[in-house]
Length: 364
Image 1 (cartoon, rainbow, N blue to C red):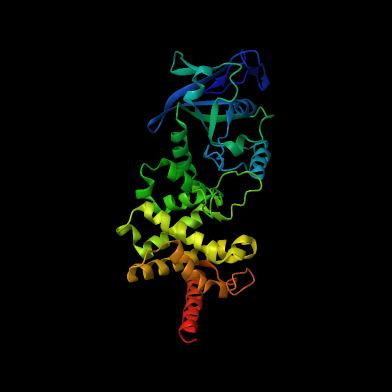
Image 2 (cartoon, rainbow, N blue to C red; image 1 turned 45 degrees about the vertical axis):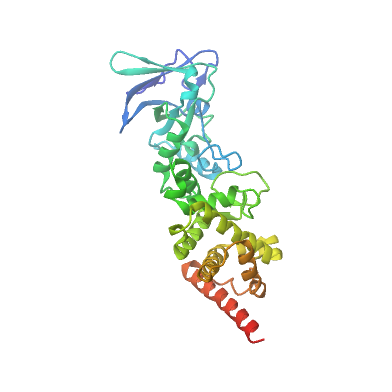
C-alpha cells in the first residue's frame, strides 16, 4: 500500500509509508512545478503529520521584532482538527514556503513528464514556513490524513510577510494592528507614506516614552507586560492630530514625533495618579486617547497662533490648569461615551471643563 494521489505522492520507499515515519531515510515528495501568478511554486499532497513535522509558523514576537503572524489560536486549531477528521471533510491547499536559509536541507530534482522530486534530508527538521496554515496544521501532528499543499520556492521572510498580509488582510480575527505593523515593515519611506503610523511606532519604541512597549502590535508578548492600547487606535488618534494641526505642512515628521511625545509626557506630569492606575482611569481607554489627542491639537494651535514654543512645558502648563478638575475614572462622566459620536462629546466635555477653568481664573 502506498500514499499516492493523481498529482503528487510521497514515496513510501523513503521517509514514511502512510504516516509511519522513518527518521533514518531522506524524505521524497513528488510534486508538480508551476507558477502562482508570478511566483514559482510546487503543488503536492502529503500526510498532515509529515507536513506538521516539516513546517513551522513564524509568529510575531513584539519584544524581539521577529516574525509576522498572529499568535496561535488554540480553539481555532482544535475546531479544524475536529472537522478534518470527518468523513466528508476537505480543505483548500496549505500555503508553505521553502526558505533560502534552509536550502542545504532540500533539493529539487526534475523528473520525466513535468513532475519534480522535493528531496529533504532526514535530519532537516522544520524547513517550511507556514505562510497560511498554522491553525490548520497546529493540532494535526499525529494525523496521517492526506492534505494538499502549495509551496513557494525561496521566498524571503519579507516576501512571506507581504503575501501573508494580502491573503489575510480581511481575515476575521486578524489584528488590524498586526497588519499595520506589517505595513510599517514593508514601507520604503514610512515617515512619508504613513506618518501617523511612524509616530505611533516611535512612541512605542522611544526610550523614556510613557508608551514605550505599551502599544499592542498584534503579536505575542512577554507575560506581565501591559499592552494597554492598540497600535491601530494610537495611530488613528495621531492621524486626527496631524489633520487638525497641519503640522506636517511646516515641520518634519521627526518634529511631529517630538510634539506628540512631549504631549504624553505632559499628561503623565499633570495627571500622575491617574496615569499610574490606567486600569481604573480613562486616559488610556479609546475615548481618552482620541479625546486627549484632539485637546493636544487645540493647545498646539494656540501656541502656534501666539508665537510660543509648543513643548512639554507648554503642554504641562495648559493641562495642569484644568485636567486635575476632571474625573477621569472609569466610573466618572466619561464612562458613558462611546464610538465616534462619543469621542466628539468627550472632546466637548473636556473643552468645556478647560473653558470653565479659564473663566474661574479670570473672574477670581
